[in-house]
Length: 535
Image (cartoon, rainbow, N blue to C red):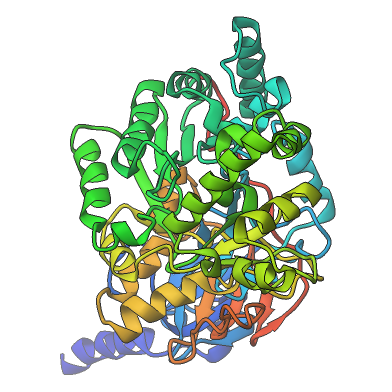
């Protein structure tokens, strides 16, 4: 009797015993396995320890590789490191079309794997040609393109300070529609710049309505007056105009490098935050992006002569300087504009010309034994020049705005030419500088909040279906960071210094940076809107 009971039990125990090694299920193989890192998924949730498997450019596994029997030939030890989605630069001027900028290394070294381009109203309407060029020549990061209102206005009206005729407005509408059909994410404007500044609010709304015919389209604005514009409309009115264009066109809106300019606006960040929060509370889909620097970068012409002096182009501007009466008026305005911007010693040249690069306007004026206004005339007669305006932003304003859940992150940086030693350091350091200030040094924000502002938040805004998050099935845009070393190195005195602490940067499954060394891979792709159809 006992034997009849014991034998079935022994058989059952034997059937449950471990199988031989060669009888185990075959392990799931992946191309690359990132093992043991702290995973920030881009949602703003606290990080978790997990392994990430990549196959054919996609994330195919997130979890415990050992318990799930996942293996890879290429195992990356991420112990003690942060693993995050590739970052998205929400406002960039990266030179992906130029040989010297195609690899996008200054951005990759910050962890950026996607760049948003065509900003400040300057994006070409020949979108298909640009995207094809990226695809054919290769780019180091993914690229998003906007069509520019200023570009289109100049195509049709030149730099004339007037309203378009009905036929001209129709021509502008057609260019917007063409660009949207070819894959533009939306319409960008630079209402601070010539010729965009000559446009009425209604003109931009009309063109925005064309872009809004396409699902998910966006309005990105460098608004008319961030607070330091000579005879401008004022900061509040300028933001209200941007909100109005967003609302009445039917687009979704983003304010570029959102902040207040000028010492008179120091400590007034609540004004900017309240304007956006009030609009969002009534249903306007408006967001913003910023960088953590106190200096801007633009052009000498934009910062030092009034808009009417530029109307019609360079020849007409020079003719106005040749006229004694109008020249005096321009120079009086120049002096007033410099006062608003902190003086000639706050205007630093980042122009490639060696006799200007790295010097302030005050220094160049001293060398020439000219007044600042006369120096501006002398330079503009030879051509416009790139400049920075130092100390135009208030760090405490940036600090306040960084806490908003709708605030994305951008560099607003342009890849410098090889012969341009002094440039704005934001091209090289905006993302780690934000992390350094607000997480490591001040403890104001959590790393998961800041990483969300770098990644998932922008993915949500741009409707990217498979980027900005670490999720199975998503594109393998991944950055692995050493939190003890993730720092910006670029300074105003020595700006062309790559950031440090990005151990690995992966773009579409390919290593652009591996073990802190750039591989030269050009694995980026042009991105189009999720839906290319009209509403």
